[in-house]
Length: 325
Image (cartoon, rainbow, N blue to C red; front, side, top):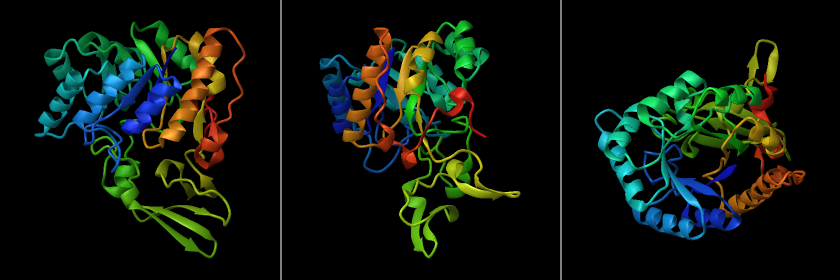
């Protein structure tokens, strides 16, 4: 299976390539990609250099242009697709049907992958994107079990890519409005989920208060690690229950499910983390490259030593086993 790794900066891309990534995904420094944070992403010149560097080390580059164009500003997204092709990208990762149609018409030789932001989670939807818009690979939402992925792969004729490590969205990506509600900035339009500009921490007698857009998300006792304040992993009162109503603040780690995902027909394994440092990227990529090679050789998977890199130092298999509430 292809190992698809994140890069939020040119330094992270170099680290991923040298650590053994088969493919690296990244985006331009503008609103066309869903990780539009200050200090991240690539200029046009940096993207061209990054593609050359990756190709020299045998790695592909996939450019994420996975937000939804604003009405009247489509040219920004059209230009991003054209610039990705000019830079030599191996594929673009798109979510918007109109942008996919534009790419198919004007850049037919550029491979098209369907972003997780499109939330295509059943054979009918996936086959539509493949037949009507020429999609060659679909990134599946993080809401499916391994059995559901197996069933989907029996009914489609395109590659599937799934997340195996990193931040875990517990909603269907592309359809979540929690961050938009709290901050007024949409992850799917502006490319920013729980933007740092709206996060406020304050020390209080009972511990650290973390707020997003004025909403208190967590109160962490002294001496305990504080998770990043995202609404879907917040601690709330609901009826007589007080706790993590949607999901615990934990990261996805599906290392031990790699053999099952291979049997399910998955083509590519994706690591989340374009906001992470090059040191994080290098360590996670090395670990997963070893796991992928062990699975391919029929050897036991190495024991994961990545727990300290997870959110809140806690990991979950998420929806793969449907263990969440």
